[in-house]
Image (cartoon, rainbow, N blue to C red; front, side):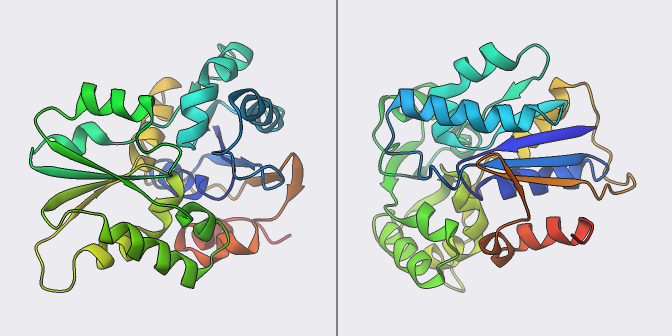
Length: 261
């Protein structure tokens, strides 16, 4: 079994690690676009062109499924990706986990990039899935870029700025960008000092990994013999995991399972 994941940058690490937990025996293809990131400010046509290039690079390795581990690309490019790759390669998009976060009611905050915050797409998701929960949209300028470069000071500043915009009574936070899942515990700490009531953080990695397995008819097998096959493509070029990826537990976990290059 081989699962490919695509993103503008290292935000795909969280979903890749979730796939690895569910199916340790799955070979992984990680296809990103450091030459073209960030994707958020690009026009839809430009974004679609770049996303198709990244997807084609991954598809050349004949995966059983392709996970679009990027909220922005999932919003704007899924139809084009599916038109080109399906049915031969199922394409699974990423959707912010608003529905499970809102299931208990109360106040929910959605952390997202400035381009996504307040967008018609996110507003539709809130309308369709938030139910009776009160929702606050929180823009997080600079956070995805800081995570991408493993710039700890910039990450802390961006998290602090977003935390200041998050209502004190929020009982759940939706991480509306896959990059944010790599710093989830730092977000939790900023929002809930020691001794405060617990805060639920809702990312998409686990759900999208499980959906990819369902699409190809594969059951979770966490005890399977681990695969050491890890292919990394940076704007189509074969490479090792970038140094910034190794700044996160997810990147180190994936690298540890790969053969030495």
